[in-house]
Image (tube, rainbow, N blue to C red):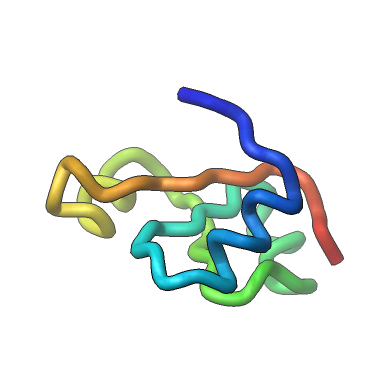
Length: 66
């Protein structure tokens, strides 16, 4: 696991890379607003369903960017 900056995340979102963007804040926070394409984290089983290919990169964030 590694940490990336906001700038690195923005570049990744603007690019052609394939990854899953996972928001790990409360459901209420997710409903109020989240990054484009972000999926709300609901548990490990959900993640396994989102990324059946174990090589898929998952980028999780736990801070509001709004």
